[in-house]
Image 1 (cartoon, rainbow, N blue to C red):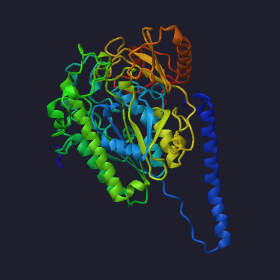
Image 2 (cartoon, one colour):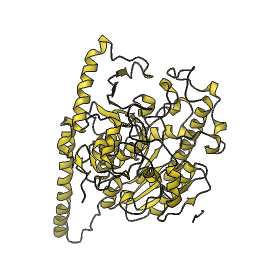
Image 3 (cartoon, rainbow, N blue to C red):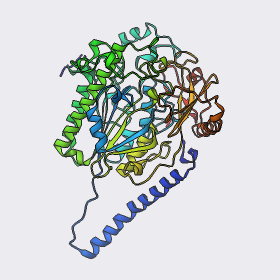
Image 4 (cartoon, helix red, strand yellow):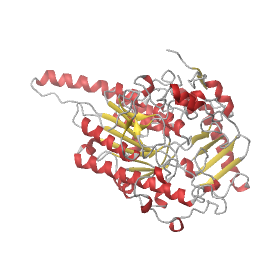
Length: 528
């Protein structure tokens, strides 16, 4: 029937001055949380009729992340609404998708953990509430927030349970759908990772025939383009909750500008807003003789990206007009980028800037300084502890990410100098090795990207001197000291992540036949 309209502990982390500072800060916060009520009680007892002062309401959080939206879209088309948001908040120049693939990003966002700790290393696997009981929605719901998720989840196995874990795709999925007609429905319960309100789906690509689910396995068609629908639903959610007694956290996750890039998947009228291919900026690292992304498809990508920017503006206008924006943290980011032909590649899953560098802008009027650009390294794992820090609640102890809330609010500088990146399987949906997107590990600093591929090749780029990463310094004697330091840092961070640099096929041992997690690098998944 169709309708129409979160055991790895802090000790496993790198013991740095930054982390120590976070612990000290957390200790002070806990002291104040205990001290303030006692002080109030003393005052109340001695002053008698003095009225009680309620604790300040925690901020609302609107977290919007687009799919496959690379950081430098504004090189190609105007993005006035992202520019406006940047002027009103903080922009992270070194925001990175450290595993640039849909489900691993979402796993890091939700759990604050390395993929090797959460077990979420590839697409179409079931996020395990047993291994990861303290996800973003769980944590904020437990702190008294209303929680909502709108759009693409991509943290369930869905119809891929019908296929071999090693691929390739077969007709088994179609046969599975005959008896499981709604495989992209995530039923209420633990699989929703703590989100109560639900207008979402696991995965589909029907951008112009957009549909989603609520609490029953019945598709609801919006009759509108996906991003338009999701931002509209987000505004409706905020409107309903803005005067409530509880703060809210709502996550909005549109699928475009992900493929497919076809005319029937575009928002109406937006291709006309994109310059002709010959008038677009031409990155020097896109080979003109064998570009895997045809110019017209690239224009379609940009049309979808333009629509997202317009919807971001629509959301900002509503927040400002309604007055709720003053008490709301607005986050705009993406799960990963898109190569767009750079280095002769399309898609993501590779260590190059077009794939790993993603937009990240945060606004909270009067609390987050406006117009700031930060060089701090920011990873998807940092969102959970950072949002907790901004909201004044404790982050899960097993989170691997760092609380960067003081950096966000302009009260500190980050001391973290390196972050770990990687790609765990050479296919996005199957456990493979050495195929389309070979496995690699790497580290990123505020200047350099160092990469080691599973087969042994190394790459090193100076991103300040060579922003298009066209000169590999790994074999150059002049860069030997830098290369050796980054080799050592990568090994150190891999130890922290319990990352043995397995090949893609070896990760199949982490899952059962239905793509449920049974173990991680930390050992067997706990069962209670």
